[in-house]
Image (cartoon, rainbow, N blue to C red; front, side, top):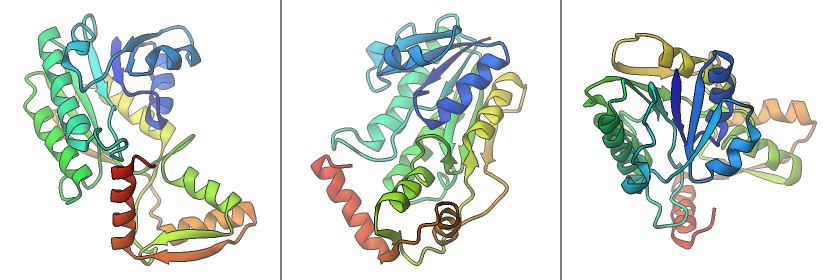
Length: 252
């Protein structure tokens, strides 16, 4: 099979693309920086430089493909004009239109746990994207993933970096809210199976076997690094405000 993978330059793609290649598939990598990223992969990966928010750049990207795995999305609105609605929801609609034009048999969308009930702008955009995917005339699958950890992830790697370099680490709220992270290679295997199988159209949730919390995660990392920085509780409303200010000012 030839599989179009969007946004495969992050931690999800790092787990997915090698898995697809191992299974004998050809990969067409679509991303704004695809030309640079594809140099890191062995033969079997074709670069396709395009932006999902620009429909004119997507014309022809799905030609000769058997499936698409739509990973591309943002978790922060940086810079401010790059919004959840424009990228996560609008980008998905644009790609679906191209998939329809190309007659693509299968559309696999990578969403997030909590997309069905979360009230944040991020979750709303993912929910809108899921609704759009569910209207696809071909075979479609929505995979809601838990927090993905692996090289360059947005949660555990950042915690580890802070532990190693800072005398104090911020913890949002009481640090007790639970989540189920999933290893990037395990997620890659699950996505590849969804691409290959005749699984019924629908929404499926993917998470690791272990449940953890920020406090538990920090304790584990402290044991691994033998470092014990001070934990500073940050009220959730302040963390939310800081995120909004960062988005408005273009800071990450």
